[in-house]
Length: 298
Image 1 (spheres, one colour):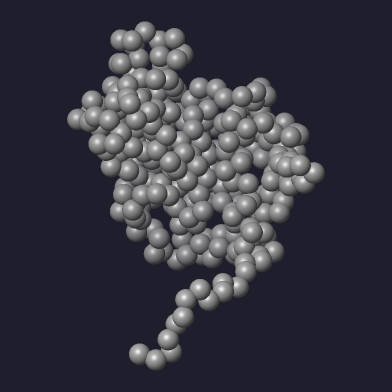
Image 2 (cartoon, one colour):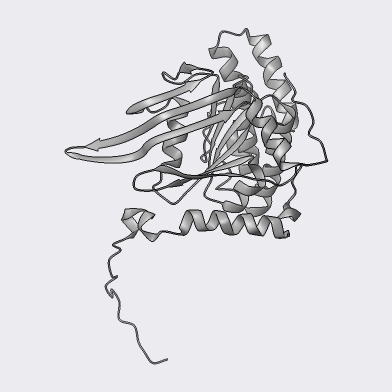
């Protein structure tokens, strides 16, 4: 397991981002477009995206509903093909899924018939590892996520936070270059979500991994990201890329700081400034007819 160097407590935003931009580009999108076709109707989900993500960056992708956040993560994961442009990992084009790109979804996509250990072992076994080797790798990651006491339990016996920790371990055991996370904490209660955010930051700061994290939660994006990629909708295009110039490590107490609040206002403006960028399904909501008699007298 490769470990990244610890970050200095003397934080200089310019030095921090200069150091990031000097690292190799691990993912590059060049004029990336995704067009969905249904019968004779075409809808552009992603339009001419140009983006460079550097090794060991933590990138958050935000935007209004329908802007293509999840589509982008699925295309990078190789789960969906893209219509045009280029998408490169270490200079090589993406052609389908690969262990070098791990994926964690909002839903708990664990095998219900397998134990925690068996779920985490699955990837190494599919790559051809021997059973003892796969078990050793699984146990290492189960210990890292703090679930060694639960390795023989099944998903239905775990809490939501535990399930997502197993999903993260199952992705990381394959030693991917990039970890893609699509609203991974969206179904968790606020307390568990906060703990999972801290656990994820601890993991990222101690292993050699690049994270692309899709979220609709602006506070979460600011708390986690090095840079925030804000997308606009209809079609999905990059509206702005924001450098989060807040020192690490970050804690929830940061949410009350003036610096955080200024960033929050900026991100909120980017996401919600133009009403015509909202999901078109929300633009023509019908008037709800009265379906029961409502008395005006009590």
